[in-house]
Length: 97
Image 1 (cartoon, rainbow, N blue to C red):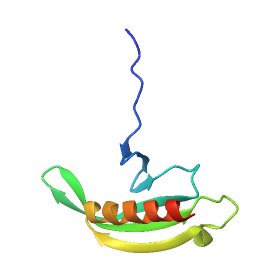
Image 2: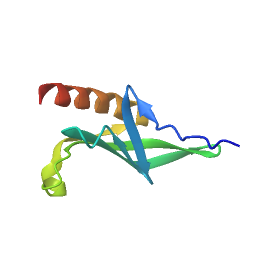
Image 3: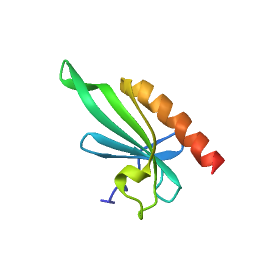
Image 4: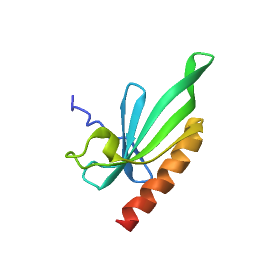
């Protein structure tokens, strides 16, 4: 039986990586990346749905401290609103610099 190759999850052509309640959007090889942190959830039947999401536009420079990497930050109600802001911020940042 042939082994199946896992496909990476992407959104609008950019990779998504999840570690617990933190989701990284974008590529570490680019100058900027988005970090989405789910800070509050609500239970709908058997699913946990994010109700509060912290969004941060960050530089990927490993020589900077974690505080120095943050360019912009906000908090949104719901994951869809957070991804909407994240997509705009990342596109603008990467096209400008």
